[in-house]
Length: 226
Image (cartoon, rainbow, N blue to C red; front, side, top):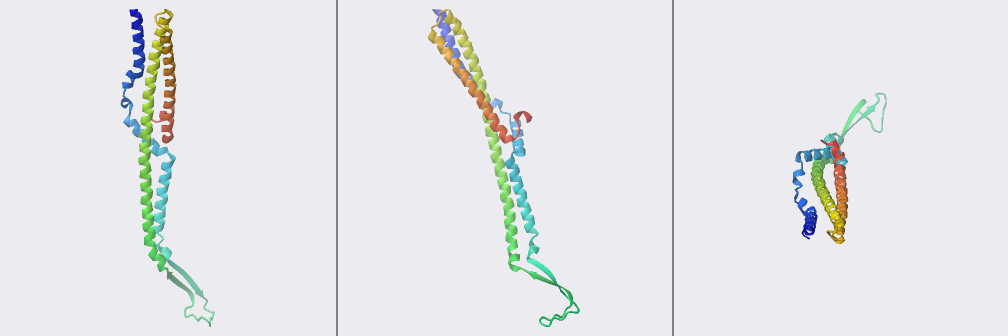
């Protein structure tokens, strides 16, 4: 009877350990901040939206340069050619030959400072939008990286739990075969083993999902970033 009680107590201790002991493990020890910085750099270099923001800045700069050199648009110049031998009685001309005629559009001239100012502000807006997106991307990479580390830590716990549940089930199987424990106790150990294996499969799925989410931002696999 004493051996039977010892076996039952050992089994219960094993099952409780599978659920609680390994939960004390800290995931912070797995966080590699230098590697995280490499992941952030890879995301900024590869993610398409970052390139879109860079091109928007380039377009805004191009618009500013174009506006800066558009002052001459307010000035127009033409030439008039009056042949020496022609006589125009309706509009007689004094000068013969080629004549240069210039004109100034005052409305366009006064408009140019505002055009240049708006183009310069557009450059600032594009640069701020790029900075904002890079900050958001950095935060998102960190969140997905921490989620991946968490998923890995949870998977390790589930692996430990399955191992402990298998040990308990094996011990209780031998005890049941020797009629030292009831079928109910043995059946509970088998149900716990099935549950722990199911939790392990779910944890493996969470690791793969977290890895996929992170690699989507990186534009590369984790294995390719050293």
